[in-house]
Length: 442
Image 1 (cartoon, rainbow, N blue to C red):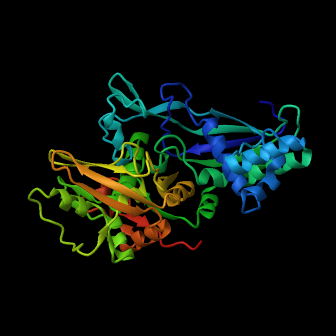
Image 2: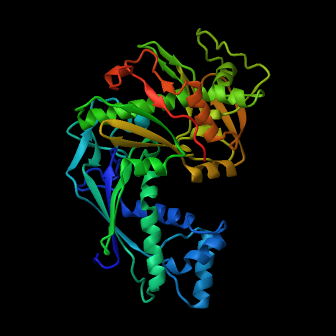
Image 3: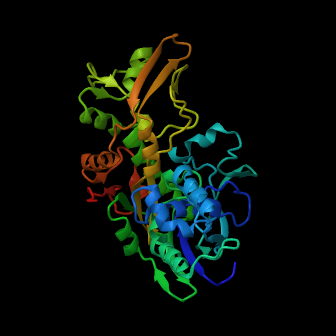
């Protein structure tokens, strides 16, 4: 890629990238993943509230643009009706740091990698070699070259070229601040931020910690400080352990029998508080199929409340949900053929001199997708128990996710101290606590 019309972006990598080519040297961010996301992000920044309005702003910046009226109509149709977003520039990504990997063996990574154990060779996530399980990561920096130039025989007009270059430079820092990449990106893997932007005019924009805070100032976060001189492997493990605890306490609740730690799911409380006629799914499932097995029944009175499948509102995995109680398994299907719903909540870890800030972002595309489905009827069946089924119609528009996080932090008093878990071995503030941010104004 030539130097003319080139923008160079240098990135800092904060967390390991789970790469599908984990066994290849130099495996790093893929342009085939980054560019489509960046294109959508850049187009979202253009004036206009409709696709037609945005097309007027970016028509000459799109791949395949032609002044020919017939081709213009075809391009408009692709953009407005088919979701075509490809902007006219090329991207090349290379790793400039030392190529390395992080060993997972005997580390028992928490919930964020919980599905790894279902595949004997874990080939979808990490390399298995000489009985060692590995994640691929690249240290130091990543370089992205973006070249704005002619497409085929049609060259972008000079003023449009400058406009596209400015659009990229003005938004590239925010783009990487709001996105992770690779597999398990919603749980904090593949977190990068921009360190420097440079173009052929010699202009440089340095991204510093304060810049990231400014661009993410409207998002909630949690923050802690790791002990000094941690090896990378321990640093990542401890960080994902904190993310895991936060997520479990929010979504499903925590029950660690060995330590005696028990935390009731905040989602359960949120659903009940939001609507006195609603409760979540777990107790209804246990009651329907008599799955208490001598344990004390919940003290919460759910009589008169209708159960909804609340946990699906925070993500529905590709293999569906299943509940295992002793030898009994409860499986879940739905009436709209939903194979998977990604988590609407994204964790964005940013490291800075031992301090870790994990921003809580929202996957707006996924939230829209969920809400567009309206009410979904989830069907629960228990093998070996009976032929009965339990149906839970669930409004996928039920949760205001920002309100959920705001109230979750408030409920915890803006401090999260794990019960019976010695986080002082992880966090260096002496109290083993995580600072939770207060509500943000949009």
